[in-house]
Length: 295
Image (cartoon, rainbow, N blue to C red; front, side, top):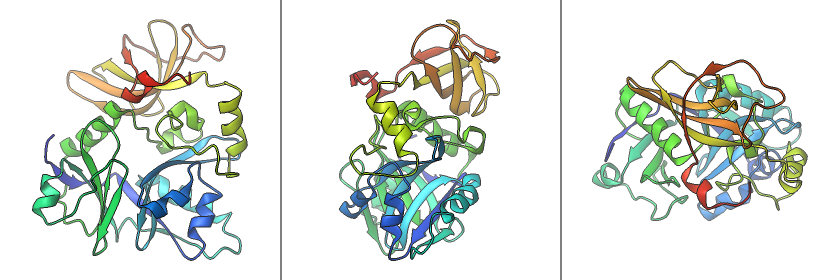
């Protein structure tokens, strides 16, 4: 979908502001949030003390505070969980989804035509007059746009195209149906610069670090092409080799469905095998996975 621009209404914004915002997030999220000061936008996981992911956040260093983009229905949950750790910190946690719109743009042409400056490199961020533009990592040239974006209301086709691009790029999402199902490495966050192993302590860090350093990564996220159907995040599928696939993200189409799913690396049903929908699926690694040797 070249040069298309539109609102992403399924996503909202949790704003973290105040003098202690950066230090507060550093103690809660998996990535090194000090990098936000370099004009970077970051992936990060917010996890339980047991290392189970509550939300995958796209962090943007907006002038009004750190903006965390995630599904709208997760924002009250994430906000209330984070509030438990504020204590005496000077931090404000606000659902800013009404005042700050989230839009997506395929290609730079719609933004430059509107007089917007776009970041030259993937992962970088620029802002002018309260409207921020962040360039995503991945195969397609895509941008987040936050603020008073002026973006048109999208069709369902636009939002599906955005989510399908996430699937092709291997970029995970967590929804209410999949909260606490995965450890960060199962979502490949260590492969897409979503985890810092040098920053120090944060909630869930002990489990995430142990999983990495002891080589206990037994499940990873892959791309699936499925027969047409009505699948959803959290659904369990049984693949032809007996492995269980837990769906992370799905776009259902008329002729086929495309998905991200967490799957055991070894063939055969896992010890905790569960019932699921039996499917004949085509399984492929995300683009970044082919060049790694961490599994």
